[in-house]
Image 1 (cartoon, one colour):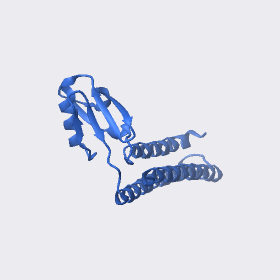
Image 2 (cartoon, helix red, strand yellow):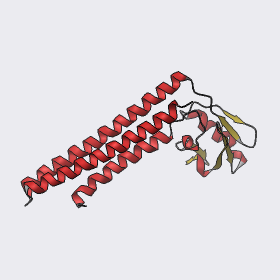
Image 3 (cartoon, rainbow, N blue to C red):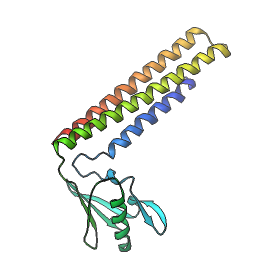
Image 4 (cartoon, helix red, strand yellow):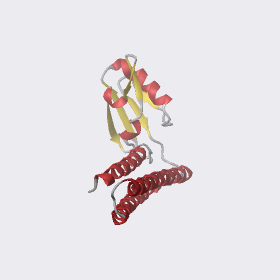
Length: 184
């Protein structure tokens, strides 16, 4: 592949990966330890990811159990979860923290599905912006260097193929996540 194209493909891959990472944080009524990925715990004065100070497990389909490696961290973990935007109330039994995921209402499922679609659209816009930037840079090439119009046209066609591929991937991801969120 042309190195002039690979720069833009890398950007498209990053946009797609960013979308899939965002989707892991959307909870669909089932316990998914990835919802805790962005939770930071105050560990001796330093904000530390929750997974680095505790064992996170899913003993039941709608429950996450957090077992800190140091008992003194229970209060800090509980505080971090309450301060996060998860909307979950942790229960602390003195040894571990449990997060119980409530069953989602129909209205909440519809809201989540809208959010999934909106994030998908944002990712598509990002992909199209990358295509526009690529085409602009190819047009500049035609003015500066000894690059033929046919070569520029070929590069533009390749970028369009990449764009189509990643937009199709985004559509599949949106469809899969929407199905996961709306399934009871």
